[in-house]
Image (cartoon, rainbow, N blue to C red):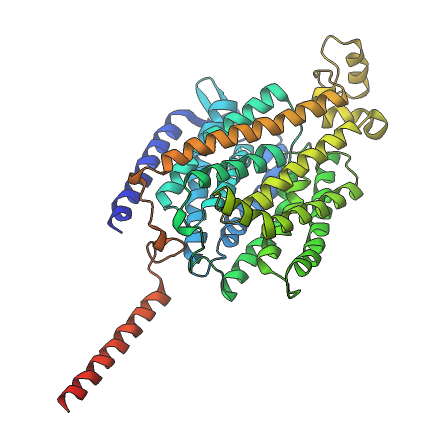
Length: 476
């Protein structure tokens, strides 16, 4: 449309010019990437690139392939599902590098970046892509960029507040990432409620081919989720546990989902939409406790619970929210990220309440650094003698740490709901090129679609043939 033809390029070029200016003025290298920081004694094998690059690449696959193809499940919105995910992800990562840099890596007038900054930026990007799922097919690409523009600073501010003041454990992001992203997106879609779509849309459905694409996205996410959950865990046994727990939770979740989807369908057949989504819920639910001593059995249980709440959510809760609360959750992010994220928060609280030195040894204070004795506590010096890497903490008990975990869940939900509501109000502005209901869930307004062009030519040919036949009849 003319609105997109001029507004979308203008918005992209404007923001790229702003980002280029900010990168040029404020962004520089950290000690692992700065050539001037290296000497003849530098051990390049200790560069953080070799420590984390494989995990970074795994997360890249999740962001651009996993999320992208999972969003291609609608039969006439495949181009947009993949391409707009690609567009939004690149925008969000650039913006997150700057916003996170000013919060956490700004000193001597510069933002110092390395590969860890890229990973953290991709975590921030994941929140945007999850939120995008609630409004998929109902917003223009300009609105998606504005969504990312607002959500990234709100997410980073919330994450920084939780890290700075609540000091909790959530390396897989069940609360800080998944719950936040879910309720942010739910608030946005509530503000953007479309009465014309309350009875569905003819183009909203999937097809055989689109479900295959979405299932491919699911499998990529499933395979690489252990990297996502373990990337920010402490190196060594914590990270090792995170990989094992994530895999077990995903596996138990998958088998449970196959059983449940057959049970809840009237004819006992497997529902591909449930397989595409609910099989991933275990990775969300185990996120908070993933590096803790939750035990393999505990991870197995979390995966099963996540599958149950996610599957039943898709079957019963999503229609209820759409009908009674006017929340049109297009991809069911409440079922895949919101409820399993809350399950993960509860699982983390229970695991923390059961944690002790008997189970962890002194590494308890590495996994939960804020439970270590304070700097003025005489116990600290003795512990440091036994574990030299130990640092002073806040001296919290297990119950105190659990209360801070619960408070984090409340802060995450509150900040996301408020932020999503305000962002939704901005997205309603007419200048952002919101499409009418009849053009939702359709590639045609945005892309040159080969199949549609061929269909139009066939229709023209048929119409021409009909006209010629009528002329012959009239002549006779």
